[in-house]
Length: 440
Image 1 (cartoon, rainbow, N blue to C red):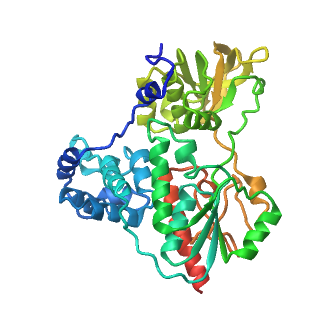
Image 2 (image 1 turned 90 degrees about the horizontal axis):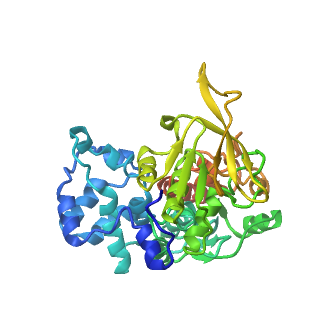
């Protein structure tokens, strides 16, 4: 039984989705930064995809140079504030902290990062120097972490940048797909507003690029184009009953919850299908929205799930139950979901097989499929000369360039679905590649 009641007000919603990494005050930040050993050749830096100089920014916090600390962070990662909140620091920087070897709590790097960047944002600190305009224009498709990071780096190098965004708000999954207990939309959007004001790129919202003609117009108008479109809708399971009412994709469910906190349909008994981090978010959110029972069902063992261990612990902590070695074979119901039918699985000779005659059913009134997202291959096919691999991911060279074209790419459409910090790193890398390409 879930400990949460369905929120009836924004105050109750915020209570149910209390922040995992709340902002530190000055005293907390001072004492936490004092714990850092300022390691030489620090392992936390190596674990960060954007290679932030973590010992330096923590030393700057400890000495009271908050603006300098924020500048150090943003010099490596334009999504510094967002990443301080949403990064899986438990397995990246904090997971690499030397204190772990001594069974001592690692330094709270993520919260310290958030402390410095949020203060710079709130005070409107001008941390960035832009080169003079070089007269060249670059288009960016998508205002997610990779697209925004690419735009910031290009603006710092003197390019004019226009971002074309399908939705009405920026920040990609940070706003539309990251659980509210990791970051609020308000916090994600204030960083987007701060970066836009600081760097001066333009964003055209509600402006999807959806035809070959649109692509050709960009190619003829701009010297280069960056593709940061992310992923598509939830992949189908291709089992009977997916069309029933109250059977939803996890990505779509989370987006509705993020954008319309209280106007979200939630069942009394929810079954979440999947074992990745998105499944954990969907399960935890269902419990926090007042579902009486939430079962996370996965076709393999618990220790074979793709989700981080701390994410599963978080879900269990709010009452989510696990059902493992259970492969869904059908969703049952008359017009709407009434349950999910499973078949037991086992590992035979290194291969997962279903056990005949082991069928069973879990009753529920809502199913959330966390079964991965489709690649946007239809859109990508509009771009001449752009290649994709067997999994539908964009193929790029070491500088983010798509073959012998003026198109570059980064983020989930390239890596197949990673973290915000990875997208930020790839967007910046592609901007440097664009600069090299246009300079030569």
